[in-house]
Image (tube, rainbow, N blue to C red):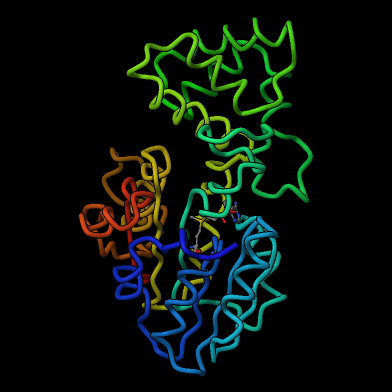
Amino acid sequence: MNDFNHLPVMVDEIVSFLIVQKDGSYIDLTAGLGGHLKAFSRHLSKDAKLFGTDRDRAALKIAKERLADCPQQIQVAEAPYSTLDKILPEFSVSSFDGILLDLGLSSLQIDDATRGFSFQEDGPLDMRFDPQLSGRMAADLLNESTERELSDIFFTYGEEKQARRIAKAIVMERQMSALETTTQLKKIIDSVIFPHHQKKALARIFQSIRIALNGELDELKAVLPKLVPLLNKSGRIAVLSYHSLEDRIIKRFFQQMHKGCVCPTDFAVCICGIDPSFKILTKKALTPTDEEIKANPRARSAKLRVAEKL
Ligand SMILES: C[S@@+](CC[C@H](N)C(=O)[O-])C[C@H]1O[C@@H](n2cnc3c(N)ncnc32)[C@H](O)[C@@H]1O
């Protein structure tokens, strides 16, 4: 794999928000191909420490190669980021000055047709972030779920209005032959959606299957509260998301951490005693510049939110 297609998203903005201490400890929980970590390395002293986690073994292998010439100590671990608290003893630090979550897919996953993430290429309906760890593939989800379950997945995780029609067409088709390839799924979607809506519907359906299969939103909800005690005072957390379902979770979490108190709004005085733990540094989510989107169209839906630990 060359890294021609791999450009880390909003890297300048992330570096300028996140790198608060030149010799600090930084982690990209979605290390992918190591693009952001490599950029961090360039802005840090050689005494800094860099860490990464990812569920994708193939990506981590490339990341390790790309980071091999960085002067800092670097450690990566193959694990879902929601288990960070459990794998932390493997790392040489127990807290961080900067934490990055860059959600979504890496270019390796999108460009490799055999991973099954892209409707533009023919490939097996796989879509697992961690093919070596989890057994269930997108094909299993599509062949085994009820029509109602499929429709709920398409509507909830893809916000697709034609969810029911598409689910019905899949269930009819699979009675003749099981779904195995991305092309089969694409043909079914194309057969029930008007041509000028097809591309958007395909993107939404593929996204929804991927989110459901990999439990993406549950992973995100599980990890966010675990990160608060792992951030040093004045340390920062940056989250890059690529669709509104993720962005909503991050926005609400940051707001809650900024507010602290969890008492019902009609309580005259606070009895929970929970102090605010975050200062929000991005009142509105930041988006990539037009130049970045031109150079890297995959960045177009990115939203960046950053908060600082109090
Ligand atoms: C957009 S890419 C990250 C790119 C990376 N920041 C870079 O600069 O190369 C997202 C990565 O997150 C990983 N990922 C998705 N869900 C994950 C999870 N729950 N735990 C760990 N890694 C995850 C994917 O495997 C993918 O490699």
